[in-house]
Amino acid sequence: MHDLRGLFLGAGAFSIAINVLMLTPALYMLQVYDRVLASRNTTTLLMLTLIMLGLFALEALLESVRARAMIRGSAALDLRLGPHVFNAALQHTLLGRGGNAGQAAGRSRPYSAVPDRQGPVCVF
Image 1 (tube, helix red, strand yellow):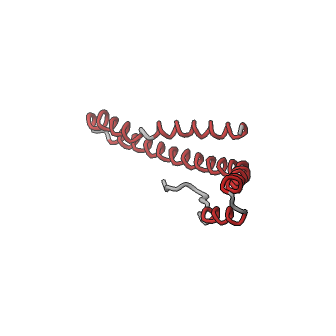
Image 2 (image 1 turned 45 degrees about the vertical axis):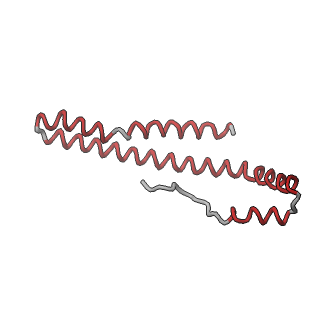
Image 3 (image 1 turned 30 degrees about the horizontal axis):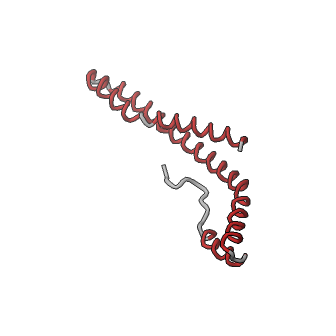
């Protein structure tokens, strides 16, 4: 678990940066109302718009990197803990309920029908 600590700390740092970048539209509108409408300067509007589009691209890039890192981390965690969790659940089923291995395998079969996702659930 200690070797995944850096991954999760990095993902937390990316999350903080992404959340700060989510303020971009609000700050853009404040700057447009404050600077552009008062001066009627189209160059200022163009520069603010280009900065905003660059910040949106940066946010998308950070989100993509964070999603890929979390997918790799979750796969590593699943490979490390999956067999132990399965064996513990199987032992609990066999010892706790008095069933046999066939019954225990039959109970776990519906969970194997769930497909594994290899990407984020939502599309940005």
